Length: 74
Image 1 (spheres, rainbow, N blue to C red):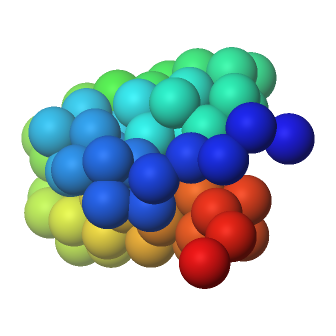
Image 2 (image 1 turned 180 degrees about the horizontal axis):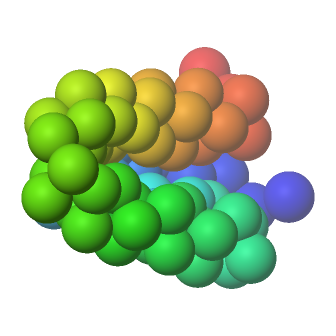
């Protein structure tokens, strides 16, 4: 597996949920994360989105960082 920089993966997911996963080579997972976050944004109209959007956003950043760190050798 090609080494990925954990910092870049986290920053990409910070700006767009799922982009860090795509950077890590997890294309399907990244697209699913983007879809879930789009649904979460729609849930803001039902007020539950105010909880799910930031929680899933933080989870996406953490997941992208964790996966990239697992591929990065120090």
